[in-house]
Image (cartoon, rainbow, N blue to C red; front, side, top):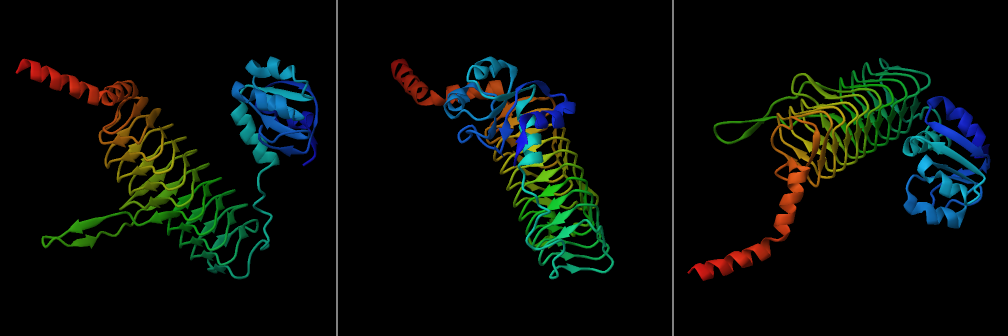
Length: 347
């Protein structure tokens, strides 16, 4: 990498999140504040990192207006003031420091890949070793399918999507544009549908629906998204899954949700838009969660969440009630002791 900060400014100026460019610098790498020195571009929007910045003195900084005056006093050659430093960080690192998945040691299409003659695959698609692509599969432009992944019959993958190693995209499932499916994930696994007979034995109910994943969805490693029993399990545009998440059959996940590791949602539940969960969140079946809900501290959702807001714990409570409950819980030994003493006095 060898680029001037002013060139980066011009490249992203039209995004309207830059406020000002002060000075200029030659940049050879993008790195963290902890390691950024001469030639480095770093990002900072929290004052707790100022001491590290002053110590290392990188060539260029992207920061916010609140920290600018302090950083200016360090005499760093180039500074960009941004309205949204994390967003700026994401876009600039994608552009200049991301791994180029099209540059592969295996070439554009490995000879060990098994591709059905009826599959419709753009010439721009990269296919790694031992990939299997089934009958009537349709794959759009600039898609990457890495080693050992399986795309079953009649599945569709739209432009600019990436299927990482050891992924399964089940039959008839549909993926939109810019969908990232990380290693070990299964899209369209059979939902957990069994009927109990009078002699207490379980009998499989075939799950014959599909999974539809809309544009710009990220699914982390080792996730499972089950196909619907009859219709659609739906993941809407822009939602991001961490690793180790499970979405059961007939679930709908809204737009721009952020669902962290250990998220599990049972069948036929519906999450609204912009739902955020902390780790190990569980949602029971046939529930609805409103838009703009945040679920914290191993939340267990056993009833509908009808209003936006912050909730926590199991059973789920508004966050302010949860904090009060936790304060009482911490004092339970002392409260028990006092009650015991009062009981003795009453006797």
